[in-house]
Length: 287
Ligand code: MN
Ligand code: MN
Image 1 (tube, rainbow, N blue to C red):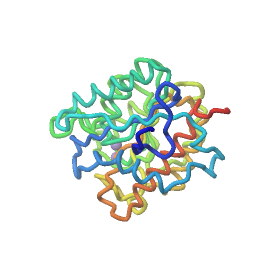
Image 2: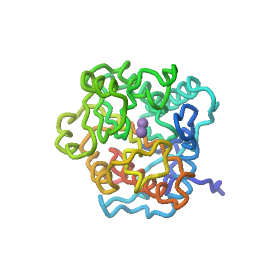
Image 3: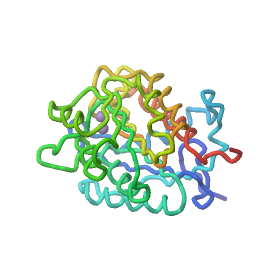
Image 4: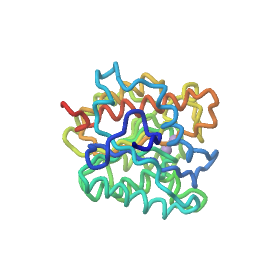
């Protein structure tokens, strides 16, 4: 008899045999506008059963993959530093065990914890960042650790030219000036994502997907919806390119399921997570 606990779709591999370790970081302690992203990982797991394990887009089946779903980290909600330390620790353990970390948010600050660990293992790391927002504030109301500052914090670790931002359409003037000087910014859409990919060939890449890059008409279940975003198909087309990169870690964040009672936002998140998992290297039993 095994416990029948809910995991994402068919991600039922034991930890030791898994190539990929999926885990949730249900934290929304710095959400600047509307909280609720702490419920994202559980909603994604719960609603994932509305999907097939087979992807007609890439011809692969999640049931053939060795993916461990570790559930959610237990976190002190009011303590971003402790959350980051626990996230870094968990990610580092996954990497040390030779597995690829895939993290479900939670708000976007969680990415800093994972990137700290991934960068330690892959010093030549690049970050691809899909988002409506630059997330390049130096602080938010005096607080340096926030989902509005997460890419600025990552830049402090990585330096110039290694953060590649797509779909961005919101931020302070100084954030855009900062991006012009220090990051690789592709605003408003994902049109040049495909032509950009060869520049990162062979390099280790962390992919961070803030789901609010989607237009609120298809994804309103998020804390800071920003009109003028990309459609689901455009995002899916970009995700389907990720097998061309050496992705060594990734996350999907900022689903706040209770703002969309139709469930459509959660369904969009589930489908993107399925396709993302199927794009990662080493996930198939038979190549
Ligand atoms: Mn963000
Ligand atoms: Mn955002």
